[in-house]
Image 1: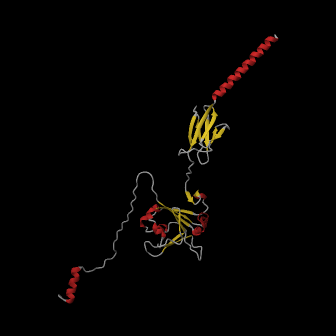
Image 2: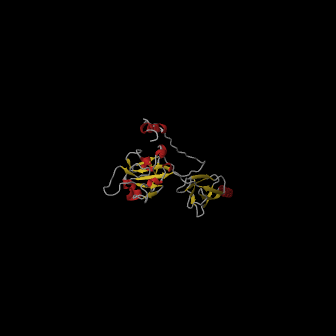
Length: 287
C-alpha cells in the first residue's frame, strides 16, 4: 500500500511540473517584443519621450535616435508623452515595428494678447489693453496712421498739429505724466520700437505707414508696459501690426473715395461776351 501511495505522489508531482512548464511556456508565448521610433511632425526624432504600457508601470524612454523597445502582450496599448506635445495612445495590434508621430501642443485661446514675453489671455493681462482694427473704421478717409486713433478708444487723445496731410500729432494716453520729459507713447511697428525723438527728416514717423496697410492697433494704456519695453513705455505703448501675405487664393483689396460737391449759393458773374459789352458800353467802342 505504501508503494502505491508513493507512485501516486510521483505521478501528481510530475503532472504539476508539466503543467507549470506548459503554463510558463504559454505565458512567454503571449508576450512579444515591440520596437518603435518616436518622431515629431517634421520627422525629427524625439529624444527622451516616455513610452509606457497602459495599465502598468512598465515603460522606457526613447534614445538619441528616438527609438525604444518593450516586451508587451499583443493587444497592449502604448501611451507616449513628451513635454510640448500631445499625449498619444497607440495600440500594438501584433505589430513588432511602430512609428509614432507626435503633434505639437498648439494653444488656441479666445482673445489672446501678444506681449513681450509671450501670449496671455486678455482677462489675465494685468494692464489695460485695447485693440483697434482699422477695418472697422472708414480707413480710406485717413491720410495718416494717427487719424485712425482719433476718438476710437477712451483715454487716448490725438491732437493734430495743423492741417497738413503728413503733419504730426500729439498723442496722449491717459494724459501727461511728466513736466520736463516727453509724454509721447512708445510706438512699436511689427515688433520694432520707434525712437521717441522721431525719425530724422520727417515730422511724423507714422506717415511711413499707409493706413490701408495696418491690420490692428494694440494700445497698452498704463505703466505696467514698462515690464516689457522698459522706461520708454511709461507713457503707454501703441503696437502697430501691418498686414501680411496669406496662403490660399489671391485676394484683391480696392479702396476708393467719391465726393459730390453742391454749392449752396451761386454768385452771378459775366461771361466773356457780356464782359466785352459792358466795357464797350462804358468806355465806348474802340477805346
